[in-house]
Image (cartoon, rainbow, N blue to C red; front, top):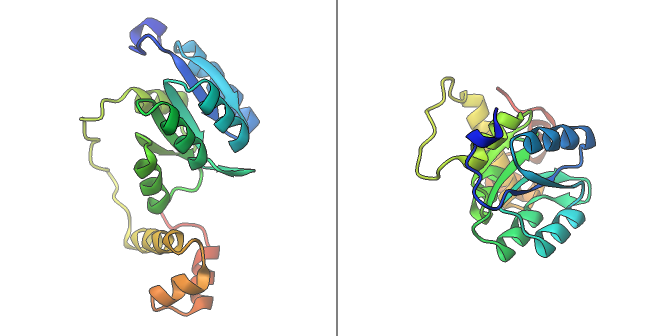
Length: 183
């Protein structure tokens, strides 16, 4: 993709926050080729520091980092530069975390593995355009799992409280939470 083909605006600053160093370097290199001025951080602490000191026009933030939650970086960035365009990346795709990310101010939420083209398209997408409907919608098992994850997040990841609200035995809920998400 050519750099001049992208309309990044005057400020091309991009903050990438991810604790997977190899992924972070690959994405940074690809985004620089697309014309972004990239700054990298591997922790919530470093990401918040950059977001506070030099708030970028664009940001791509991993949701789960070794030292905490990437949404803390999104909040810090939104406080300093509300118009910045933020995309949240995660390997743990769940509706509850997507909703939380959007409520805090992310413009999009991408599941890993996302490539540089997906990230660029999400960062530059106009907010008034609707995405196309999914070609393969979620299965009933996946919808159930997403609902359980949402309630679990709303209960601050408290298994007993989640089980009570779902009228489910705590051990049954623990078994469901221990499994991978259905497709």
